[in-house]
Image (tube, rainbow, N blue to C red; front, side, top):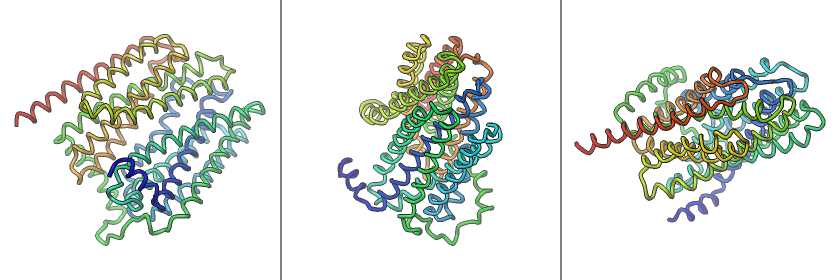
Length: 433
């Protein structure tokens, strides 16, 4: 069966379409919510964010994924996944509504961060629940196509949410900045509510989990998670291809994180005056959308390129391209130049991730795959948070630093060199046996 026929057959599935609708709607709301967060935490007229403030905001956004990620599966294997999709979205309706009320009444951003943290933490259950539910609504031959279609579609939906949220913010900004943020938050809450209603169209038992009388209790399973991560690290030591891939993407995420903090500061404090928050926000939103276009380009480009060259060669090419495009044209420090850099960095980021995902899937035993991917999740997010912490120390208030930009480029070059050396040495060791 061709890929096109797989896709057509997939979309004919009644229950897949309904699960797919929950994913797309929920991730659209995520995009809208992210607009409100960026607007309120970083681009409100009252805020003049320093690198440290941005690092703190990114930590709040990403650390829930790192801390909760390995343990989410313990609960998803015990709770009705349909109910997880329903309740997660309903909880976010309440939490986002509370954030909107806090913004409207002038509650301090530090106090609201607790509620924001809770809302973002719930999202981890939702995304993991969607992935765990997929095998229950598609036939095994269609699972690869389903796994290719759904994450890309979710990313597109999130980018669409960013676009719509930005449009709503721009349309309501002439009233007051507070009203604009509240309007975007209320829109996100409404869309989360719609996602919850869409989940009700799926029968409660359909998405699992399947009954297993031998399944350990939650407390025992949670202890097993911590031990399992250690076992995953040991297993990676024996699967060097996957380990090298994880090391490469961890290094990439670090330099990508420093670049992201720089981009935020440049739009907020360098390209625009302190009172031009709308222009700063719109400029950054455009850069995010352009980077997202790079992600989508990589989703189409990577499968085509890797039909002719190895995954290793493509990773090295992308690391080299990231190094070059950070400097040319990034070192000009103009908005147009940074859009070009953002696009190519988006291609490199998603292209490397697709390759590493494949290396881990192919290079790790099935019995360890879940634990290794949980470790992957931790590396992916902690590297970004660590980068934000470093950026808080090395970047100036304006974000403009040729020295840091050169350091990022050299970091990509060093990553490519070390990855090429380690992966070549391993491939030679394997071939000699």
